Image (cartoon, one colour):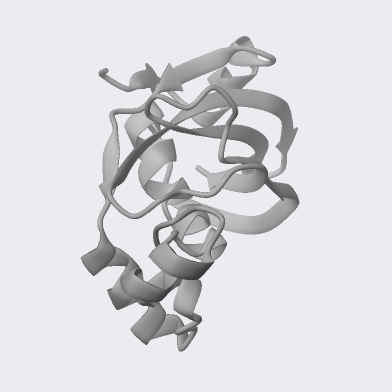
Length: 153
């Protein structure tokens, strides 16, 4: 799906409380999970040991780190909406994050992106984006997160 093009940060307010896009699917491979484990130094067996996860985990497979799932927010945002006239985009943090379902190794995930809030300030527009991250073929979302982003013009 092509991203929504917004002509400038001030025009974001026209999309308040609307879903602005659904991203393309992204595969969360075991290789990606292992690389994230190395970078984050989180080698918990539920993420990296497929044999043990098959035997001992209630999911019977390895699962992605929650923070790996969150790390795709930037990709998902730019895949859903592009704000022209922005000199600098700054992450101001997350106001809410819930992990509702695991992301199994090899699953494909995508995000539904909704603009929850938008406020103009001198020199920037602050937006709060709601991401509902879904695993292909699973009814309940894997993660719901609200991300505060500032668009400097």
